[in-house]
Image (cartoon, rainbow, N blue to C red; front, side):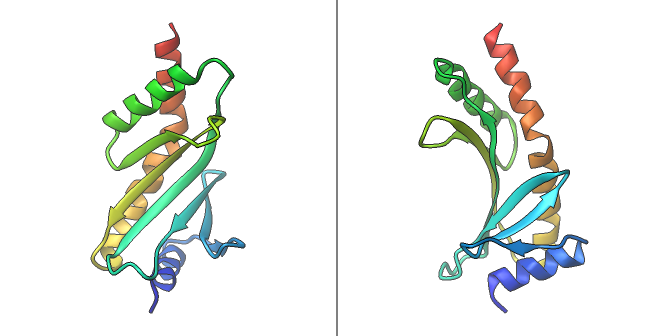
Length: 132
């Protein structure tokens, strides 16, 4: 079984209906948000990256505050990386982890989705705090 097949099977067991985008990445909806699952089939490690893309837009001239907010949220939240994309127009979050078996995968997906489900609110609160 490939990593994508394993992840898809776990997501289906969890009650999700995973889809594949045009690049072959796994996509689900959680709390009305899109989440992408990236895996490298050629990598020997059992590693997954779950992305919540472009959940916030940057206002021109406020890049410094947003970069500081990304840094603070990343430092203070387990498993998550929050970053400004290379165009300096959007903020994205990812949860990345290794897993050993399907039970471990399911547990970590559950944690990652909970974290990513509230990351936008956490991020906006930090931006507001830094802007004051």
